Length: 130
Image (cartoon, rainbow, N blue to C red):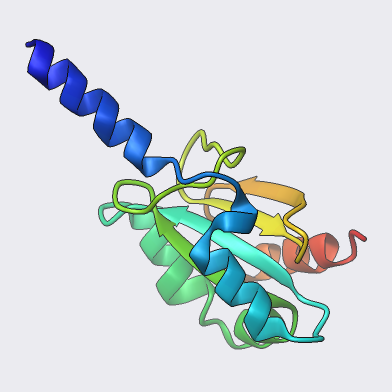
């Protein structure tokens, strides 16, 4: 019993990976932007999340959404069971999407899935946040 508790604590602690500025995926995303004025869309998912799969396979690939996202966002995906999660980016449900600027400031958080058109409107609203 004690070993199980210790193992669980170690596993949970291993999934938290420090600040967003130290996250390798975040650093790679920022570097890929160069001088472009994009935001990072970090999405928390799991392998068995139907809403996550819907967003990734349907909504993100809608022609209008895909075009807008490629012009305005760099996407990072984090599996909450397998990836190290940065401090300060807690989640209540999945999918959870965080919109982050190059400096690591969280601009907005969105929980759950949406259809393509409402999601595009949210992206446009969020992109307008300075």
